[in-house]
Structure formats: structure tokens, C-alpha cells
Amino acid sequence: MRTKPEMMGQLRPAFSELNLSEGFEFDTEMVTNEIKEDCKPLLLSNEQLTTLMNDMDVAIRNGLAKDTNPSSIVKCYVTYVQDLPNGTERGKFLALDLGGTNFRVLLIELGENNYFHMDSEIFKVPAHIQTGKGTELFDHIAKCLAEFIKKHNLDSKKALPLGFTFSFPLRQVGLTKGYLNSWTKGFNCSGVVDEDVVRLLKEAIKRRKDVEIDVCGILNDTTGTIMSCAWKNPNTKIGLIVGTGCNACYVEKVENAELFDGDKTKPHVIVNTEWGAFGDDGKLDAVRTKYDRQIDEDSLNPGQQRFEKMISGMYMGEIVRLAIVDLANQNKLFEGRLSEQMKTKGAFGTSYVSDIESDKANYKETLKVLAEMGINDPSLVDCANVRYICECVSRRSAHLVSAGLAALLNKMDEKSVTIGVDGSVYRFHPYFHKLMVEKTKQLTKSDIKFDLMLSEDGSGRGAALVAAVAVRDELPSMTNGFSAK
Ligand code: BGC
Image (tube, rainbow, N blue to C red):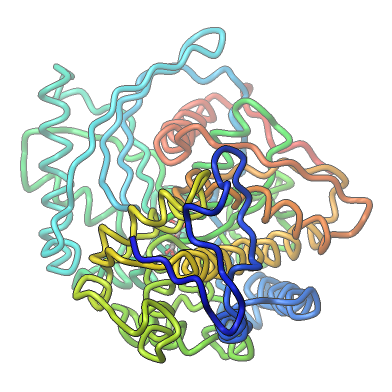
């Protein structure tokens, strides 16, 4: 390992001189001033975050109102989910979960005394299918479902109720009907935008002729997250995902959801904000950096999902990589030397950001990540600089989520709210939770209390619960709406 004792005229200790074993706390002292300077655009002040929070509030209100919705960037789709699970749901349910890195089929059984059993299988969606023809995508889904049904010895002729978690912006017109607005994340299949996704699924299943299903609900992963948390904690009123993508849904009063044409005798409905699109009208321009602009230009959906692109796992590692490459090219890192991997788009996964920030001793993880990226001889200062870049990018991500959450909490104005959360960034980044909670507190009205609850497999369990509640509500005496404020 190369050590570089002198940097910017200051004497720098070598790795061996440091006592960085257990309890190592990252010390930004080691970070060079020029890196700190170059990373400044990644730091967001409370003033900037407050502006974003207020803009998000306006964007959400525009999405909810009939007059402004057509031109609104944040769409606020009504989900037609109006009831929480109440524990009386029983039976076996199938669930499909499409929208993250993998596609899953699940079989879920709900029974007495909160009995819950789940079998699931992960299937790959190959890249050529993710960006191929829509019919091929749905044929692939139907094939995986048929394989699952066979493998689990389920009666293929008896239509099992199915909940479909489809984690993309869906303009819903009913619990089992929704039109895709646009693809996000790594998907871009032709012939699906503006089509009813449930119809496409049913048609693919019909083409196979070997299974029967009864689609009882289509939902977003954020809705699944609310449902799965509400099953245990009825105070859950926001569902948040910070994973491959980023989005939130919340419980809104029916009278505020002006486009809702469902059952208005019930007081509430879940609204899927699709806040990932926030900023697509320029509202984020003041805080977007050259790296954000580059990410957007090189993405499958340029100009779209700008908020999501500054936050979520699909992009976080790449933002760090772009910063590293830029700074190395200016001779501010690795003495200007870069490996082929480091120059390769997408090679620096978001899990690396979590690894680097999890370092407990002597930059062990950072060195490992850099070695995997083909950089074998970094200095101590390089390691500190890389860690600093990661921190700036992940902290900004957490703080942007906080601005969104605070907008929702302040708008809902309930005195106590549980937020169901899921997603790989939230789960695996060592400080995301802490950063997000701290900043959300600072931005939220002082009399509002909130807590976060990790969702137990919201997109699978939630799909079964939406299906289960739909089945349950066929018996009206058992209904149980969200508690009115
Ligand atoms: C999608 C949302 C989804 C989020 C998290 C976004 O790209 O548009 O529908 O909830 O990712 O998976």
C-alpha cells in the first residue's frame, strides 16, 4: 500500500501510524480542502431543503387537484385502497412483485392469530426483456407464475386470488385497473405505456392456457409497504421506498383527492405520490450538480424522475463514480490514475457506498472496494477523500427524502404518524435511517411526532393483503376503514 505522508503542505499520517482499529470514526480532517470544496454543491443547507419541502408541498397539492393535475409533475395517483387489514383476513393468496432488481412470485397464507406463512421464488428478468417488447415481459411473468404454481402443487384450475405489486407510475381507475404512465428504473418495454397492465397480465396468462388466476388488486410497492406495516401497526399512514427507485404514498382524506371516483362514503384513500418525478419541471435545478445532469442524460429516461435520480440505489453508486472520475481527472485523487473499471459506467454499485461508509477499521472496506474497482494503491488521503465523497452523496440522498417526508407530514398534520419503510438503500446503508430521521425532525412542525417502521417484505405481503382485504370486503360487515382523524 502506498502511503502519502504529505498532502497540501500538511503532514499526513500513514495507515500504520494511525490507531484506527475498533471504534474508528471517520475524521474529515484527513479530507483535502480541494475535495471538500468540490463536494460543496452536494451539501444541502436547511434553507435549501426547506425550499424543496415547500415546492414538494405545492407539487403534491397540484397533483391532488382536478384543475392542476393534468400539468402537475407529481401525479398523486389514487390507489383505490381505502381499507387497512384488520386481522380477519384469511386464506391463500398469490402475489407478483415486479419493479425492483428481481421479479418474485409469492404464495402467502393468512390465518388465525396473525398466522402468516410465505413461500416465494425469485426470477430474473433478463436485460433484453426489461427493455424489449411488453408482450414478452408479460409472457415471462406468466411463465414464472405457471412454473411456481406447478412447483408448489397448487391447483392450476382453481383461480387463486392474486395481488400484483407493479412498482411503476400507474394511473389507476380501479383496484384492478391501471394504465402505465411511464417506465422508470431499468425498464423500458414497448407497448405498455398507456395500457392497462392488469389486462396485459391476464392476456399473457390466457395465452398459456395452463393456469387460472383472479387478479384482486394491483398496487405500488409503497402501498404494499403501508399495508404490511398497518397489519401490525394501524398508525401507519405513510409508505416509503428508498431502494432501486424512490417513492412515497400516504393516507389522504377522500375530499382532498379530487380525482378519486371510488367509494366516497369511506373517509380516506391511499395516494401514491410518485414523487420521484419531482423536479422534472426544473424545481431541482438549483441543487442539481453536473453529476446529476450526466446521470440523467445517460439514463433510459432522460428528463424524467430527477428527484429519484438524486436519491435512489439505481443511481447513487454511479453519482459517486462520476465524482471520483471527475476529481481524479483533475489530479485530486489517486494522483490522477484511474482503472478501466472506474471508468466504466455502472461499475461502482450502490452497495459499495454502504460498504465504504461501514468501515470500522483502517479503511479496510474502502481498500477492498477500491481494489475491486482496480485501484490497488490508494493513499490514506485517497481513502478519506473517497469516503467523504460517498458521505456527501448518501447524506444528500437521505436529506432529500427528509424534505419529501416533512412535506407529507406537515401537510397531513396528524400529531402522530408511523412511516413504513423499505428498500435496499434504507436497509443496508449504515447511517441512512439516522440521517433521514434527524433531518425530517428539523423540517417538521414541532408538534408532529413520527416514527419509522421497517416493512417486512411490503411488496409481497402487501400485495396479498390488498387481495385479502378486497376479498374480505365482499362481506361488507367486516369492513374497517382507516381511522378517521
Ligand atoms: C417508481 C415507483 C416506485 C419506486 C420504488 C419508482 O421508480 O416510479 O412507482 O414506487 O420506484 O420502487
